[in-house]
Amino acid sequence: MIGVQFRHVRIPACAATAIRWLAAGGAPERLFCWPGRLGWRPWSAEPARQQPARNLLARIVVCVVVMRGFVLLAATAVAAASCAAAPPRAARAHHPSRPRVSWHVIAGAKRFRVLAGGPVPWLSAVAPPPPKRVLAPGIHPCSPGRLPVRVGMQGATMGQMAGVIDLTNTGSRPCTLRGYPVVRLLSPAGTVIPAPESRGGRLNPRPLTWPRIVVRPGRQAWVNVISSNWCGPRPAAWLLQLPATGALVIRHGWQMGLCEFRSAPSSLSVGPVEPPQAPPKWPLVPMIFGRPLRARAGGSLLYVVFLMNAQAGSYRFARRCPAYVERLARPGRLIAAERHVLNCAHVGVIPGDVAAAFAIRMAVPPGSAGKARLTWVLDPPFGFSESVPVLIRR
Image 1 (cartoon, rainbow, N blue to C red):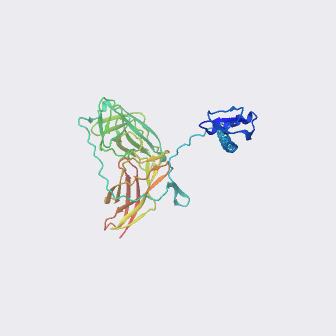
Image 2 (image 1 turned 180 degrees about the vertical axis):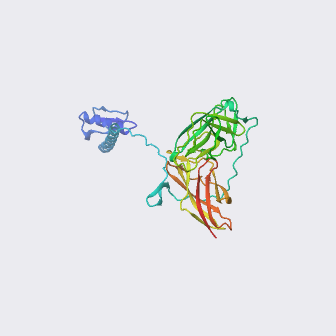
Image 3 (image 1 turned 30 degrees about the vertical axis):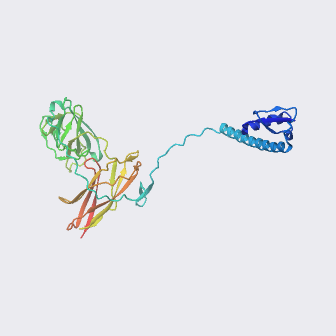
């Protein structure tokens, strides 16, 4: 009889030993376990103390162990094959939750995308007044000798010629420019050509140090100019008079507007001195619909402001929400003005070309019935504005 001895039997070892015994031609009914060294070896005779019942029990145990071993080996082989055959999984990219966007219909087919969820509730918190910037002492007006000037103009609509006068500080210290300059047209003889002149608009928000601006060494200041319907004699030069600085002569680069209607007056529009055009602090353009807005004197003016993200990329408000100013006025008379904090803390990401809606409320004083105009400005003087008509009932 052949016997197999095991000690501290483990499933893989027992199964391997049984397989080796069967592969050697041993009969399954002659297989039994014997306490001893792990392994197997042939015996010439069965020990006298081995009983048939015990041999039968041992054969049952070994069969169970062998079957468990086969199952374990098969499962291991299948897992190894699947691991070897399957291509490695790419790590799942983490995409932040995208904001839900819906469509806001203006009229008919006109619509634009807006953050879903309705307007953000109005916040009654009053914003503090804007800080006042004071010029450092020792900064003097710019000297004409260290302020070279050049003009770049191009054609605009209706025969206009528009451009900017570029002033560069070539000195070693900062200097100041002030207010609105005056442009005089000079004839070849040096005399002044009469021309109606008006104050033009700004290219940038009004600086905090207005009416003065600081020009650092090597930096520029701009003056916006527009010439319209010029039907007079051709000037030989422009004379630029800067308050508190002096006069500068511009002989090249300027162009006058085309003469389209001789019966109409000519005009020359000159804007204030201001820093060069820079990217806006807030790339959000306000929009107000439902014109004219309607309110009752002594009540509240309720409306919604849509702030459109005008840039291609997404935008998120900073931790500190900006202020906004709303003014209700008639020509020559201010009816009411309020300054509040925009409720932007939980707005999140605004995708490009998508608007965020904000509910706004403004108190209308008693006795103000009639037509008026509302102007809404985001963080003046750095943000954009929107102006709409208002009809106030008694």
